[in-house]
Structures are given as C-alpha cells and as structure tokens.
Length: 295
Image (cartoon, rainbow, N blue to C red):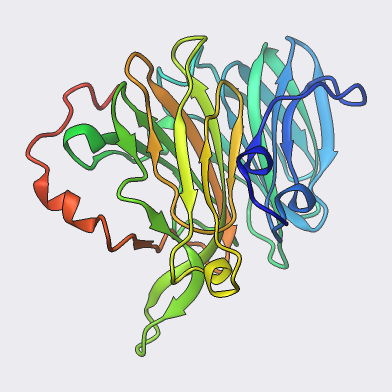
C-alpha cells in the first residue's frame, strides 16, 4: 500500500447500507493486520446490533448515553457527556463470541474498535472515575492524557487513550514510533510493533489539526526502501491511520484538539522510541500549560 495524505486521512462518508456509520477503518483499507475502527451515531431509542466473533471489542462513548445488552452481561448509563471536553469517557470492553445490542438512552456518537484474539477475557465497564488523568510534556507541548485502557489492562491487545491538545500546542511530541518489536537482552520490551488510529474532534466547528507521519532509518518501510513523510490535516470526525513511523500532532491557535487513540499489535503496551533528532527539546521545558487539566 502506498501511504499518502489521501490514504492516511480517513474522512466521514455516507454509507447507504449503514446510515448510522460516520467513518470506518478496516485492515484492508489501512494495509495492516489488526484494527477495525468505526465512529457511529444513534438517535434516542435507536439500536445497533453486532457480534464480536473472533475479536475483542471496545465501545467508547463520545457523546450521548447508551445501554448494552449481551449474552455476557447487560449495562446501562454508559456515557452522558455532552461533548468530549467535559469528562473522561466510559469504555465497555467485550470479549470474543459476544452478541450485543447498543441502545441510545440519549442521542449521540460513539466509537467502536475490534481486533482478532485467541484469548477470552471478562467483560469490563470502565467509568470516568476509573480513568487515570495526567498532564504530560511542558511549554507548548503540554497535553492531557486519559488512559482508558492502558498497558496492563486485563485484555489481549487493545490499548485506548484520549488526548487533549490546547490551542497552539503540540502532542505526541517529540515524534515517537512503535513499528518494530524489540526486546532487550533481559527480555525487557524496548519497542512494540503497534498499529494506531487517531480519531479527531474539536471544540469549535471549523477546527482542524496538523499531523506529520514520517519514517526514519529504524522503521521497517525505510529499511525496505519505501519511506514516507506525510502531512495530514484532519477535521471533525476524521481519522488518521499510523501504520509506521513518527506521528506528532499540532493544534492550531484558536482550537482545542481532542483525539481518541486506538492501538493494537505485538504487545498490550505503549512502549516506543522517540525521534533522536528531537529528544533534546524535552530538556528545554520550563512551564506546564495551566489550561490543563480540563477537569
């Protein structure tokens, strides 16, 4: 697959066969092995039914409130936030071979993702009170991190993170990569090989972000002779796929950027290596942006 800004930026599209689908990323479209991702909407009282099959699955409320009935348990009151900027999300993890129906108790949007698994874990509802919230970086690289499904969670592959980048700031910076599975001599994980989806929302209707995705000499595509250096400009409800390489994000002045990260790959981890050309920047931070945390 040739990676360009057009193939790496996934825009909302109308699907006549599934009108409540806002956007979809599949392994076939992304050129990778694991992650299927959808953003979806439901009017109050509407339902969506599916099955996890040979996959582990997660639902994340963006807005609205939902109930889920399944052969592995029932849950109500999932969500409730009016925008993604007022609290951390709820996330419902469902294991393989789960038949389920989502019902909108209040109209809204939600994200779902699934990846293949040969493990069977217990269902798990993560509430905002369960989510560790931290402020990372400094100066104009300060951002807020919500660890919805962090490394060490009782799942197989999925990792979920929410990130808030204030107006004029950078996140995922310095650029970092996780495209090669590397273990040290003692077995310690140095870098995981992870696919990643960035799904974007903004605090104002005309918001947009800049995301650069680029390989360097340690990346598999660079070694294979097919490097890329791509500039993506996602807007509301767009996704950027990150199959390889470093992937920093910039939030233009005037707009607060939110993105939901979905990752999966060789380990249930976030272990990465930063671009050595830019690590020095971290030693220059003198302040932390006082606009964070948001809540």
